[in-house]
Image (tube, rainbow over all chains, first blue to last red; front, side, top):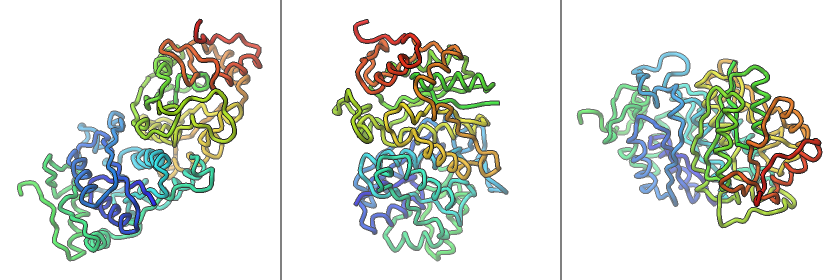
Length: 223
Length: 223
């Protein structure tokens, strides 16, 4: 029983990999180099894949950074310290659609039954492609887009964190043995993976550890 | 009024670009280098973009060839001369899903109203991601996946060839001034863009010119 697991190097996707492993899947981890500023994510993803026993790890280069239009890929747009209302400038156009599309192709070649993605619609940044309706629409697409789907065994899109709070995610991952010191969530992490402590992703993560009553192992700038 | 137009270098997508231009769109052409054997396609796409007045042309490298699983990307699988029943080995897993996902991101950054794709479900090779139900599912996805969609102006997925025969496509493109000698359809084209004349794509193309009553400008091996 195989699964493709999207791994960003952050807290959510590491927990998702641990959940997929605990469900008995042979996990093929995929991370994307899409020109993101926070390059420390990529090294973190590789470490997490090994630590959590993935069967394989792929880093795929996707040229969406060249499109611009997001604070995460465009150096001319500042990463804000507070999210504000609506969809923030850290939104990367069609990012999860592109990631799931690539995973769909890989899943079909590997004969995988499921794709795991660590999206979360509770303690999240308001991105449209992290919501249940997005996952449902992609599931529908997978049924008609692929040979697997046409033959009646479309890959299942699994989003086990979608309705969990950040604290619940951290508690579940801790039960499953995830070492969160390996993960990098910060949008502006330095090359060592140390976090700014101020961006939206840092704020959600810090509050999650506090609410879970679990020590935050994150290293911040200056530590 | 802007559009992103997927351009493969073949007959169908060239016609699609001509149709988008004739509808008044400023067209931003995108082609993909996905490790396909028929590399002459890429040069053809660039020539067609210029000849048909695209406002921009991008060639994006997508690492799906490394997945294997298709005769179009895997040298260990032969390109067959006849399609046979069912979905053929030239099917590339999730190819059009990946292409449309990338186009979706680009369209959002460019503020494009439409994405044009030259899929065709009449004289085609039986790929699942060339059918109307695939296009409809992707349209539904675009509405929930993007900021544009959430704000009520999702990009439209336009597939103007979907119900046309190959002969109708060729007649329409000829009316619009498409120079089909620039296009390469063959799965096994040589570096000069000359066609094998025997694969499924060559067969459909040759029969299309014959049925349209238009001289076939394709150069075949040995010519």
